[in-house]
Amino acid sequence: MIQTLTEHLGRGIPLAESDVAEALEALTDGTVSAMDKADFLAALAVKGETVEEITAFARCLREKSIQPPLDPALRAREILDVVGTGGDKLRTINISSAAALLCAAAGVTVAKHGNRAITSKSGSADVLEACGIPIGLQPDQAAAALRDHGFAFFFAPHYHPAFKHIAPARKLCAERGQRTIFNFLGPLLNPARPSAMLVGVARPDLCEPFARVLQSLGVRRAMVVCGRVPMEGGVAHMDELSTLGETTVAEFYQERGFSTSVVAPGLFPFQPASLTDLEGGERDQNAGTLRRILSGDERGPKRDAVLLNAAAGLFVAGHSKSLIEGWEAAAKVIDGGAAITKLKSLTQAGRT
Image (cartoon, rainbow, N blue to C red):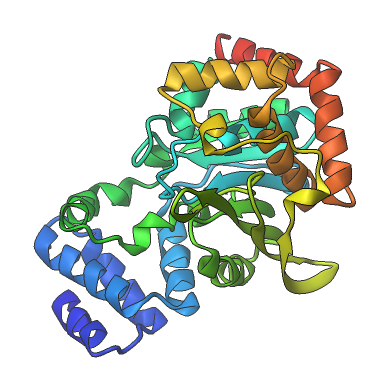
């Protein structure tokens, strides 16, 4: 069946939801060859994934995932994830992870979903582990941490066992230099099913379709962003809001409809900076930077980048009425000591 679907994709025929279900059965079947799976994934990428196809893949993979036992009172809260698809290859610090912690320190319930580094030196799991935050919690432990501490990390491999049968095909595609749909499915598969999401993508043309997918999956409030990064000889894009240039935004909220816009850097008191000022390193180096930002010791461009993305997270979660208000609130959380106190409480909880 997967070979037939590959042929259909080669003729430009989009997949129906039933086709996606059949394809995923083959992709997660250990007896199907990695070559056949890789050919299918490559054909899908070459055709170009539609909103409907991405939604169907996400929905089917969610059904195959392990669900943490969140109680009704916890479900009733606005649960936020701040996450990027990765793939921008800019090697910045872990901006999303720092912004997620800052939002938690401001009182938002944050369910952070992520993995170890794939295209960078330090993924969200790496930097949070280096900070002393537990990343290997079992589903019931993660649910309890989210309830009791307002923050929990949901380590992707613990919740998506089916992925082990897809990994060899993804490796083959990577060796061919071919991206696949799995390069950007990660943010759609948070097992905690957050109601509010700030998602970064590495291409501005993905903002609107990605937001449409989140809306189709039942997310109540979401902002999808891609930041412009001026560089010598051209322009790059980052999977966060950018302090270096304009940011493309697609967003929707229950109380108002879908919209697209551009966030201009002139709205905020950014310090002069270049991409070099945002570059990170190995996990321990990035963890040190994260601590300095949350403690208030880091006052430069890296702080600005975290404040901007935390501002968007607070706005998406309904804790501020605008990005400017969110920026000011996030700065107060750092300067008042609540941010570093939150980090210390999370690391202490990880040792008990």
